[in-house]
Image 1: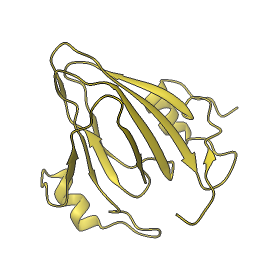
Image 2 (image 1 turned 120 degrees about the horizontal axis):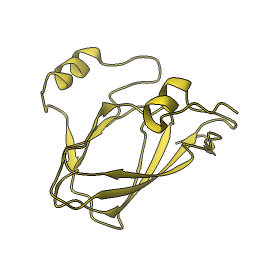
Image 3 (image 1 turned 90 degrees about the horizontal axis):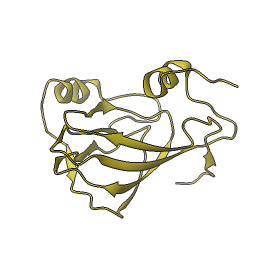
Amino acid sequence: MGYKLFRMADPMAALTVNCMGAGQNHGWHYDESQVTITLLIQRPDEGGLFQTIPDLRKKDTDDYSQLGSVLKGSDVGVVTLNVEPGDLLLFAGFYSLHRVTPIKGNTTRYVGTLCYKDRPNVMNSPEVQKLFYGRVNQG
């Protein structure tokens, strides 16, 4: 990667466990962290697939035409990973559009997530904190 990574300073985002039940999903998005590590702890009965379009965002720009197509339902360029419990993913979440497909069945999907930036002492934006954690902590 060519640069040193630092654990996010955000106490709510540095290490989380995401729990997703039936009907829940995580829509298409980019991360605020340059690098994200996920560890699947428990897979749901169905769904919960990790999908990504690697490197859709470049350092200074997005490919808005492909982004628009994907948001309208196109699967061109989409890579689907069938992750098993214990699988560790390391990906460039800031540059790679990604999502988790809807969960089906009674088994909850559990994923540990660690977030890293290219510089120290970085917090998520208040908007992201509110969206994911229901509160803002810029402390």
